[in-house]
Image (cartoon, rainbow, N blue to C red; front, side, top):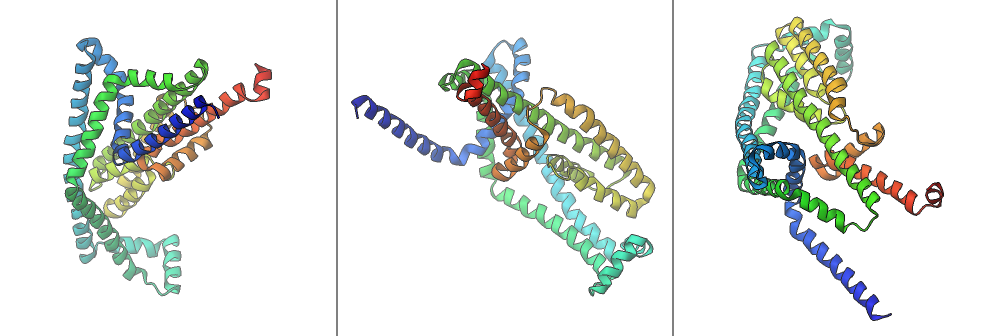
Length: 357
């Protein structure tokens, strides 16, 4: 083995070791760094517009960073306080409703309808009495909701320092990626040992996929939460803010979506206030979701991800399982880049690709 070969093996071996050590060093901060990078990617069009007036990239990045920081911190503090108060009040109201006989309407509906009678009969065959179990289930559901929010609020308070550090890292990464992102992008492309057209295909696929998924999922989830929350406020559903935020979170889920929130809220509204406002809420939510899903989402994803619907669905599910919330974006991006690499392989290394060329 000649000296040059030994030098190459040592270099790449040493590079691999250092890359692993760097990964271990940055592991505690990977999630906030990733969020900062994704936010910078989303805010880049705004940076271009602000820079037209400010004329300085650093000042433009600082302005947007301050706006984003205040836009996240202030609503988060307000919404967190409201969520805790509403979750605690939920259990108190459920207890009062059970003690005052407020579950009677639900029980009467259950036993006086064909489906309710069938459920009651099946429960009776297994030793459960509907009139006894229904108040227990109501209290248990409210207690679980209240305990979950209160427990997580307590944990958040205990780990406030960790939250501040993570948020600070995200905001710092956001600023520097916003200011120097073009340089990092070009440097990464230059390091990639591929032909220029192959680099363009891979990086364009990554950029297009991230843009499409961000526009489609984030924008539509926020719009769904806002419209459903507004409908609940209009038709008199209590704890509408809590349910609006839950609707936005559920809107990111590939299975069930916002229906996991507004359908139970509609049933509650029917029992508590009558079926006229419940039907109105169903109509409101159905029209709003139809407009968002069939008009706004396709417009937001007009460039497309280049993936079949099934592959996009599996990418989101697998990403959630592997990376948590970040997987909503990383899953489809990984699948799109892999599909592009397969096309590059077919063109560069497959015999059929070369013959076609």
